[in-house]
Image 1 (cartoon, rainbow, N blue to C red):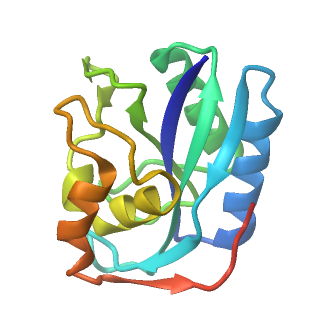
Image 2 (tube, rainbow, N blue to C red):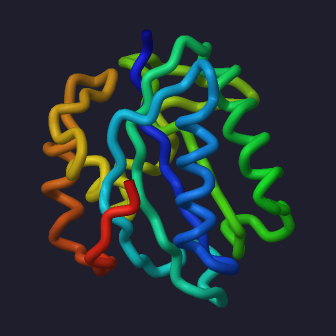
Image 3 (cartoon, rainbow, N blue to C red):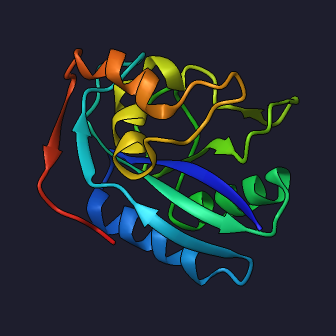
Length: 164
């Protein structure tokens, strides 16, 4: 059984309900189990800034799927919940990203793990630290090591609600 961390984000429609539904779809997949979910964080958009703030969380999953097969499932869930890809870093009903998959490093045309730029983004690292501070990157650094640096940015506010 492999352990993966999934970044979950939404800023179109009923973001909380969309995220709950995505987590439910993950957890009811026969080859995936949701083990933990962070709090939901409200964060400023990055890149394309002319859009609503995002609701973000991180989910820890256990799976027997390969990284590429897990990516297929994530993209199917995004599509089923109305994801369209029009503007890079633009508004979206749902975004599901593989952040870490065990301690693997993957650099293929379809998938990069650890997720590129995640170490620069508090909206990924703060929720990851919340549920898995000891999660290790291939370089040996932990989520807590990286999160401590980003914590000082405080470009997010926590919605005081657990979804899972």
